[in-house]
Length: 228
Image 1 (spheres, one colour):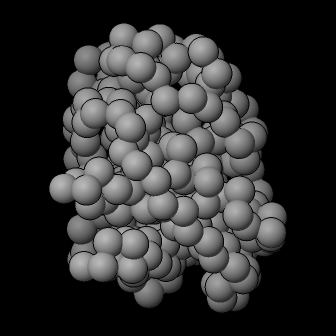
Image 2 (tube, rainbow, N blue to C red):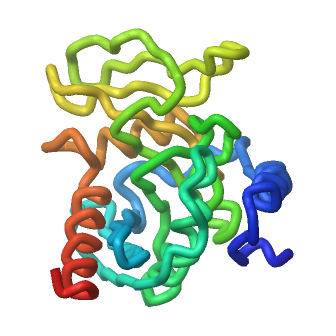
């Protein structure tokens, strides 16, 4: 099937994940923090109406000012299955990205990359389909365990797979004494650089500015689309 198409069932989705996962590039460092553009993507749902809205917000990486923003609205066409969430979101996220006229640069997803039970979260999936460097910054560690990082901004601890002990990401403290975020490589960026970008983007708050802007925009767009 076409790699951009929505799979007809769970088995097909897992097979497609297995195929696409082999295309993740892990040997590139990625762009330097504070250079070029950086784009946040996020989604919001109205489950009663099966509506999903995606937002893409391009920031100037040096100043963190908004360069461009775009949204897209679609129908949820794939059921909720743990580990396969990207298939619910990818079509609408791609549509939002395609509406941008600016170069997205590095894409930051509110979710996971390699820190995913099948090593292929939304950030990796999106990176492979678009060819863009991507990383995931999540609010919780999903199924992985870690030691608490130190209390200072920039302190981190490895995020481990409990089954084989592989490091799949990092719990990163972006603000002193505040709960960490969970950073993982998506595509075409190193883990060290993904963490450096996250700290650059989270200068004042726990979440990166990319995520804050994209979350706000997609919530507004969902309200407009549903009239709620």
